[in-house]
Length: 189
Image (cartoon, rainbow, N blue to C red):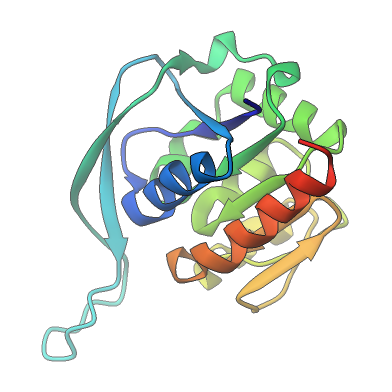
């Protein structure tokens, strides 16, 4: 069964992550969850609350489910993976500094393997220096992160550029995963 790398950390967004975590195996892909260490991580609900009676201008986080990382970033080998799915939440803000994660994501991109990215995951792609010259989307508050990585940000639900598919947030899970799976199958995996 082809393996898909899913990097996470504490405060990974629950909907971004769990949709792909359960959807990819339905098409016979093994999701390999990786973290700074191989341990249990806390996910969060990461959103601006929709209650107009209590305005909230920034993202609020509430505890979500837990997810076990099977492998530490330092043990990742890009050759082991057919592609990568990068979710959002606050985790990318912190795990993007990990040099082993950067290396592995960059090697997956350089090998032309499909990568899907939702929301704040763009921060990892920027840190790995693999979106320069690409068209991408992300949650609007991360547009500057995409541009600092050399990408052209567009405010669209989903953007495809080569073997990269990006989505603004968890509302785009279905269309991003549909395209990501199509890319994997087209690549013969």
